[in-house]
Image: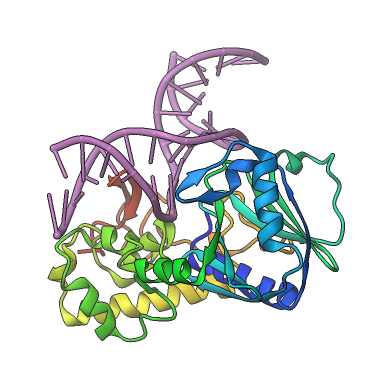
Length: 283
DNA sequence: AATCGTTCCTGATAGC
DNA sequence: TGCTATCAGGAACGAT
């Protein structure tokens, strides 16, 4: 379940390894990997033909991240958008062996002039899109401010929260308001800030917004410096797992003692998502 | 118009 | 031990 820190690590790794490289081949293992006009595909050859036409012979210029979206801009007028959703994984390899277990989940193979870029996905929620500049701009506008890059002061955060009477955690998870935070980081951030996930977003006092801002930056940056969160599947494109899971303070700690006050951590559901919090520290 | 629940998918796990 | 039911969650979409 890559969230902002994991996607950022993937971006940095790929920026270093694949920018400037030329695409020399595309193999489609699962046609539903491609989304075009909001539709997924069934015909493998059709998808392969489409991707070859738009990708082969072009160079990857740079890789941009906004929220959990990755945009690979090519030296034609197109961008290739990747969304990894729950179990998507981008991997680079000098060579690969299709007989190993993980190749059950290979969805797409992009051959570059010096190595391979592979897209695996167990649960097939992830997808790619080929976007014109206009479509790319539309996507970027649809997303809220990036939690790490664009929310760069408590005032920016305040502007977003004061318009929302919904529960704070819902707003943190709403990608059209704040882009990049997922379920795990949301709980960790709220715990660190000492604010209840259920508080109406517009009820926060200035001091609380300031704590929330600080907690958001700290947890996201900690996630990045720890190499990301590997609860199960996440690995960076070099196959390395993260260590942030060892630093979790509330997520998946139901019934354990709060690290600050000793109260029992509660687990509840908030719009269908598991939510962990300390009822005494988070008000 | 804003908000909510459902859906996609499949491996892991809980419970009998 | 082995089976079945439930859970996990990002975000698009339809329903309210």
